Length: 332
Ligand code: UT7
Image 1 (cartoon, protein in one colour):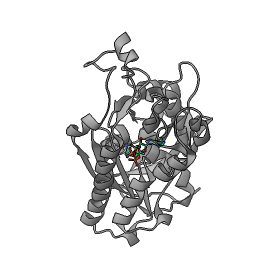
Image 2 (image 1 turned 90 degrees about the vertical axis):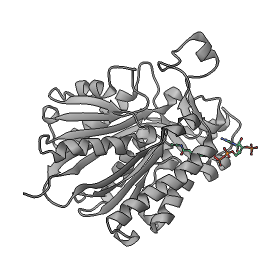
Image 3 (image 1 turned 135 degrees about the vertical axis):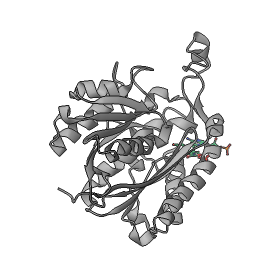
Image 4 (image 1 turned 180 degrees about the vertical axis):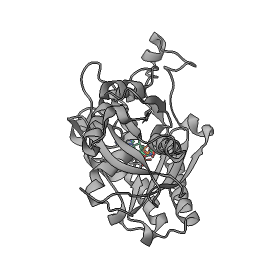
């Protein structure tokens, strides 16, 4: 019997309607469209507005469309994993809220928190359940309502992040498609450069933490940039090397969308041209766990069966990694 692999058999994305442009940010903080565009590549991002609208809204939107597109009944889902850094609540897991709303009554569900690498961590984890042969339909969601933890008076962070999410369906195949290899890394010493100070068990919410604006993303941008640019490029090159892949073999790099300059450096290291790089940072900004599935969704109609993709991410933790994925289907 051939090895069972986890193939991605469908993808869908969901972004909220409200568009926050660089122009609007110019009215909120001391910044310019020109600075944001040249330093990050971002022109606009989406924001989820309204009372009681959490990350699950983004996940539910993505999964509902995914089930429809792939002709999957919600009851058939065995497992739903949600990668998120902005869960609706500290508990229960947002994956449970999504599964309940879409009717995935036979699934077990849990969240994975690996900041901007969340989706590739969840995809790697979910693929193991398929590879055992025991599970047939696994849904991996990556979604974040970053606007819920962003300080819109801090120009160094508020220009970067946006809200959005995506989902993929994993199913078993005995052919040479699917998640072929993964290399994941973590380094907890990076926590000092990128974290949220309060709201966890170490420093629970209080009047003081709110007054000190500690419930927002704290990021030392240039320190994080240095780690991101080397580690995302290195791990992508390492996954290619150990599988005998060159730039010519790669159809697309699917990079986490944190900064266009980090993406460019990764593509250069992989020796691939700009036409092989999936990009949506200009329209969605950094949606944390959402960036990679949103890219796959945006480029789905350009992907062919057998295409070699490198998925790569770097984020808070620090966490980083790269996956080699062989695309399993042609455009509809
Ligand atoms: O998603 C996972 C992890 N996160 C990342 O990968 C993000 C990595 N970091 C970055 O993408 C970049 O560091 C930023 C986009 C956050 C910042 O860009 P930078 O080129 O590293 O700028 P910087 O922090 O070195 O700041 C350069 C200057 C500073 O002014 P001075 O001190 O030189 O006078 C900042 O105050 O730019 C200033 N600045 C701004 N100016 C206009 C910072 N933010 C802004 C802004 N508008 N929004």
